[in-house]
Length: 213
Image (tube, rainbow, N blue to C red):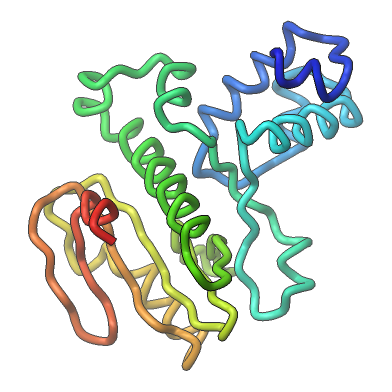
């Protein structure tokens, strides 16, 4: 609230925390502004202003969709990424025990954690990297996509399972087929322990491998 007041006058101080909490429940999903306006009861102009303020204070980021054409990325729905997974869990009312016992909540929070960790590594990287997500017209998707200045692409899929199976790579394989020679590597991050290289540039790694990259 202090940061936001320095940027703009807020007319509905009760609505802003409610919007932030709602965004925490939607972290890792596509942004639907019409649904947000309907759920929060905010006018579209007010909602757009609040969303801009939340991104400027780094509370939330909207990750663009990958597309071969840069212009098309601007018209596809971005993905909501809450800036702090711990704060997101608090706002949703999740503690460690509930997360471990409820895979429906663990999955989105784990995806949010990976997204924020990737942003940290992007900020520290020497070259230019951009974080995006992927979804095609058939519904195949990859949670996070990294692209460098040479156009090389790395897909990162996040699964809360400790025993990933072949079907967990479906989105990565679809992504690799779609982008062709630009595909550099596909990584499946999971909640288990083993690391294993697969064929066609695919890897299965535990989530904690992010701390060693």
